[in-house]
Image (tube, rainbow, N blue to C red; front, top):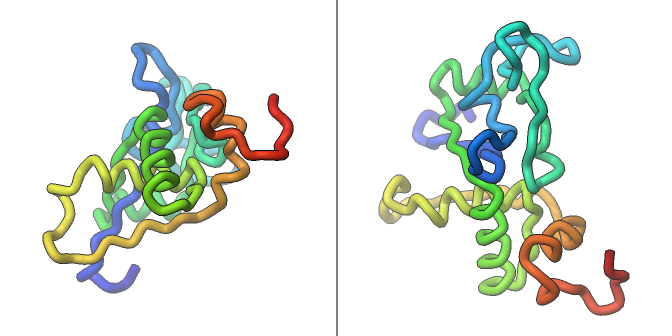
Amino acid sequence: MDDSGVRLLGVEAAGTGESGCFNSAALNLGTPGILHGNRTLLLQTPEGQIEPSHSVAAGLDYPGVGPEHAWLKETGRAWYGMVRDGRALAAFERLSQSEGILPALESSHALAWVFDHPQELPQGGHVVVSLSGRGDKDMDIVRRHLGEKYSIPGQAED
């Protein structure tokens, strides 16, 4: 984080993209507020009531963001993009098929941003995407959205 030669990018969950849909993009769409003892950016009404959130990734389905991310954005040290559920699922599928790795749906949002924005990345540079969890925990969600081709032998169906 202290190396100014490293560009920090984060990716938030933008929901389904349908009109009126909920999302979990507090850094891009939220306003300052306090929740659970932290002053940060929140998805909230003008009166300060917390709005519902949504993400296909359970770990991103939250109406706020940690105060360190809010600070990184405020200071300009990090930039945050948004990725919709469908793009995250497509990135999950792409990495699974090409590399045999089941990324967590949370990490799939970051993968989707990288896959969808190659022109915004340095030519000949290095890109590090943290695969912060295992995608096997998300298989019921993946099956629900992408179908039975993602059934794991011996695993009970929903």
